[in-house]
Amino acid sequence: MSEKIVNIEEAKPHLTVNCGETIHVIPVALIEDVIAGKKDFTQLDDWETLLKTILRDWLDSI
Image (tube, rainbow, N blue to C red):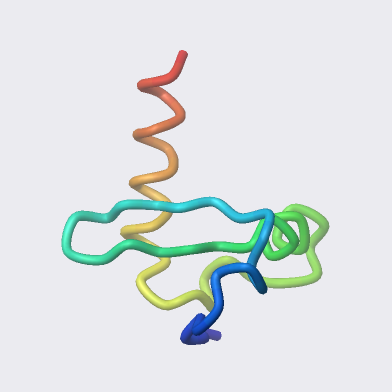
């Protein structure tokens, strides 16, 4: 499910997730599709690292 984004404007609004060696740009629409059950988060490249990073950042913010 990984796509190379050439023009970041195409992915707005988006989340930027810094996973150390890799920075992921995830369109908000994709996250909304995961929440709605239309897409499976495990289909994303490096989903385990993404999930851990998102959860860590969320916990750090509360």
